[in-house]
Length: 433
Image 1: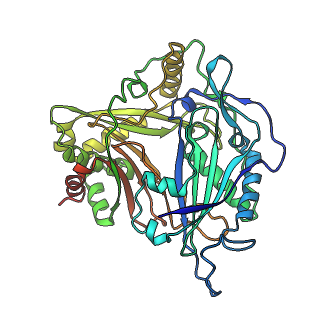
Image 2: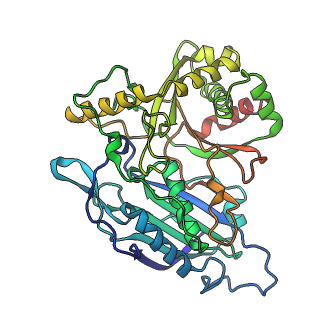
Image 3: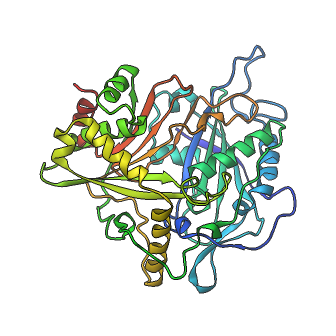
């Protein structure tokens, strides 16, 4: 598979924007300094007109007109102006965003493959990222913060790949930006404005850390990089019903599916029953703080916690026991714990330590991110919703996403990165064979 780049340009905001240094919170600085690669696939809708020339990108007024997307992007960058800036090292050595208005990278490409070739059995991989998402050699300063690639496929469909630097936003922030960009492309005006005041997550003076936060310790991610592949596992309604029936009525879909996934992972890796296994869970804290953050807070507002359980308990206790441990970990992320995390990161930074930012967990551990309930399929540029949305690449063995299908009644999918030698055993355990 190959793509040919047709156009590469920087798209600045369409109007003058503030020029200043944007302070980044400790939660922004605790994420990996990488661009998060996502891909949206838009099948070409039925068209009574003659087939388009598949070797040429669409033109003005046509399906996924690049000019229309560029203009909408320029308009979106007015409100989301930090994305048009650059990541820099500020005075005192702290990383910040220099809001320069230089612009986001916009790439137009054409591919020699069809949507079915890529997306019928899509699996996140370095190859998928290379083909569909712009690549930055490094996420370290100085670097561009927002990158977009519009790829015209041989079948007439289109893939939109986005690479947004993780320090600029979390998943909720990314959806905020995509909603604005797509609304403007449809000729509509967004009815909300992003909140850029990250000092709402400033550490207290003096810092106060009443809790332990091993998940943020550099010693936690002490695993070595291991070869892995990513597979997409559909959870059919019958399997989901069976998983949920073994959990308490109050267990969320995320807790139930993650408990099931955790058990299958322990089986596949043949972990010793007397050892410990840990689950890394993320929680959106926008509404957990007191007072809560603005609903449109644009930045990183995710706090991680660890669930530590004996492998033997994951394997032998009722599934509801494991799901309840996960639920309790998510529930305990409140204002006090969040402030403790922020202050812990402040103290570590003062010691010259960096929060654990890598992805290399020990082989005993698991990290599961939920996209359930997130409107990832609402990214309609004016030619219909995407038929498929996924990360273009995963970044470490033992990481997983739990996602909803195109419609709310569609099956749930689990994207899971695992060492290839464990795949067969994992699939048997996951599907109960």
